[in-house]
Length: 438
Image (cartoon, rainbow, N blue to C red):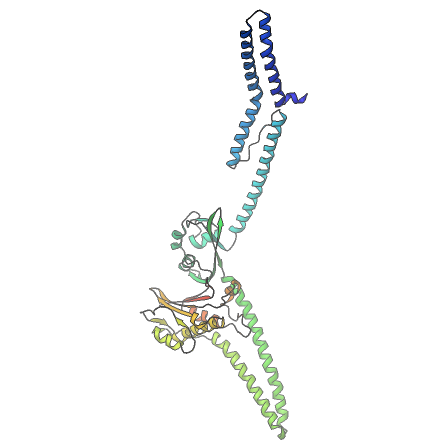
């Protein structure tokens, strides 16, 4: 009997009742002597009224449930999953509303879970020492963390600002690196001193739109810690090298002392002294390499003719001069800058770049002088790029790691900075910037 209380049962009951009215009333009217056609018309009319009345009564729960479902689905579309429906008495409609409520509860749990994950991710990003900027294709900053606000806008909010309007208030070196889409290591100076930064750029598609992610990492502490480790390493290296030379020299000196008493061993004695001299020469070259780095004198700056500088370097290392030389003469220590350029050109050649692809570009402006050495060698990995300027760090089997470190010391002594960047088409670009006066 339960099916007659369902929606389907009530519709069947309404149809049966309407049929009974439509056929019963005409026979009743005929029994009382009324016209047959009028009786049948009256019965049909009353049957239609009964059908309409009962159908409205029967369909009322269905109509109300459909309206509730429509309202709930509109809330789903707007992201509101908090509405639940009261189950009606009809079994079929109760199943639909129960399914709707289950979906709403599932969506509420999913939203709460996603919110918790987003909150955790945002907390981690906001506490990160790395400065992060997410920029959309219209150059608006749509996300940033606390480190980015502190670095670029003195802690003030930057979300929603145009990147190009924010950069003029940022440190000049940082603004330039961001504008040029650079990836690599650079230095900048503020009232707290000189800082080493690493910048990385990447692009990805989010919600069918292209976005740019900028990551700026403070490298000063890491470089300082790495330098301490390097100094420990070099002390062990020097100790090892000295022991490897002094122990044989001591042994050979003892052997020579024994051979002096034997006149017939003069040839052997001469060989002993030759070996001692060779080891002493090796030690001299070894220590002089470190002395050139440790005892770098203060630069003696003077006016330098650019063409004369190029002419002195050209016979020693092959390269290509790109562009015209500046009309304004340079101002720096010519001996030290010449040594730095020779080291960099040599590194480019050893990195696999041909001499035709090693280019030097020189330019000047009102603030200083810029010398750019670009090659098409193997470049550097991100890990090597972050440590390339450290003293005694080298990826070469026989390298001592003094070339780039010496260049850095020379540029720093002039009051300038050095920048290393991997080129998009392959190779490395090293920029030396020197102010007109320290």
